[in-house]
Length: 401
Image (tube, rainbow, N blue to C red; front, side, top):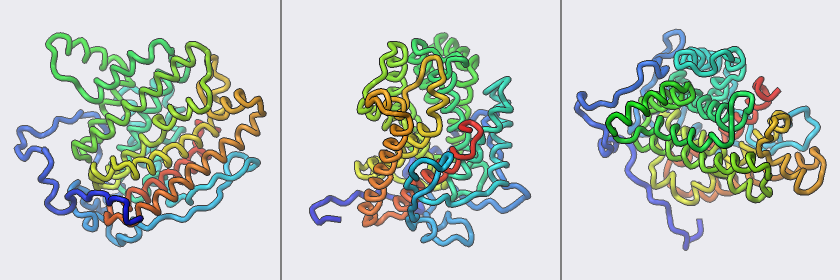
């Protein structure tokens, strides 16, 4: 790191520092969780569940038999084939873990939770085949605990449900003019406002009547069981940041005025899998301090990883989105329309854009290697694993076939 570049502050972490949080010691004031939030401790077959309590020193939370260096060493990159193999390859790390049994266990728990909260009623078979539990297994390979992996599966399933029912899928009731007020209720479901007398009762009735809102509230409750308060609020505020971009998409769809590619990318970079990646340390059972997480250099790196992964989503969903009566913004469709080129040529340009973002992340990770924080290094490796698992999942999920 250049001598004139300031070092990142390393805030207190490790044994004993969790007492600096505001988590109350008095059980009478402990957080109240939703009974049906899917929390199901324990591993299949009675296997030992290692201690993943937040605030423990990182080396103490590594699963038995797994050395610290195995969790923080950067992954290698290669060019990976995707789709039908006829397009240029995507530059991406290799998938770290494919554990079909673990993925199936998380999917089992996820489907049981979705039925309890009423999510995707009448469409459960399609939901099961999508495999959000498999997505969690692929993208969080440093965790073997299905209850922690369920946190990621639930949050992603709930975010996708909001996207489908509120933003994208016209046949599921998505209407551009209804999106902003729906998203305002999402914020209140995930981050309850202070009591306002009878108005709060009306708010609660509205939330309980909408399975998407119930799912988001329940998923946030389960997240809170495993995360520190700052990690929970990080996930909430990043979600709300994402919704600003959703409102832009809604306006473009309603006015039937596709944005220029530069404007779409400006919105897409804040509506990317960066949101999903905020869960990396929660699922991993540690915490990257806020002073590191929000440092501009790390923030840029995670945005690069998140944007690369969401371009993978655009590549796999272009046909689905083009077929909607109100086509959603998609970088391939926008490039083709703006430049008057074929879908194939636009796809090749999108692949090049993806690879540039991944190489940008790779450079950012090298620059951050000098920071003496194992939590930072582990999170960066986690972002690599997320990119790799995301590509693996899009190529196998029924949603994109």
